[in-house]
Length: 160
Image 1: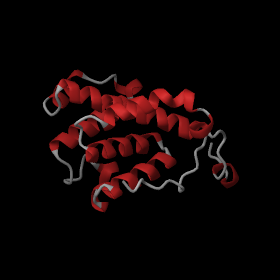
Image 2: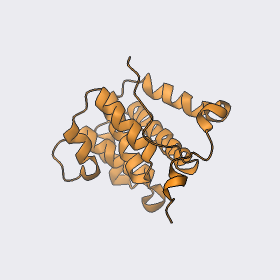
Image 3: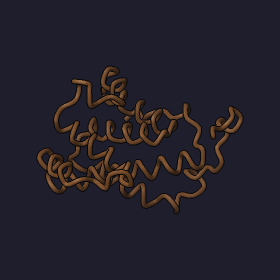
Image 4: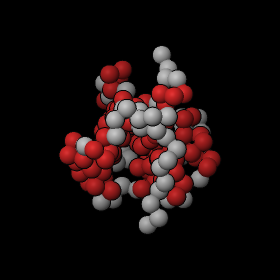
C-alpha cells in the first residue's frame, strides 16, 4: 500500500521543528556517537544501511549526502546494499554492517551469538556500545521520518 505523489510531497507532522522536546533524547545519542572515536565513515555507512533496510527515503538522501561530503566514494555508496558481495569494505566495516542488519531486523534473528563474537573481534566493548547506539538512533529517526513522512530531497550537509 503505497502513497500517491501528492501524499509523498507533504509531511504529515513536522516533528523536527515543532517537537524538539520529544526528540531531545535522540539528539543526546547523536552527540554521544559524534563525540566518540568511532570513524565518521563507518557511522555514515551504518546509518545509510539501516535506512536502506527500513526504506527511509529522507534518511537515505541525508546520509548519502553526508557521506559524500565527508569523502566517501560513489562506488562504496552504490554497492552498500550488496556489501556482502562487494570487495570495497574492510573487515571492520563488514562486522559493523552485519551488526547493523541484525539490530535493525532484531525481530527476525534476535542477534545470534556467533555474530556477536565476530563483531567483538573488530570492536572493543565501548566501541560496540557506541556503534549500537548509532544503530538505535538511526532506526528511531527512520521510524519517525517514515511515519510522519519527512519529504526527501531538501537536506543539505553542513559546510563545517
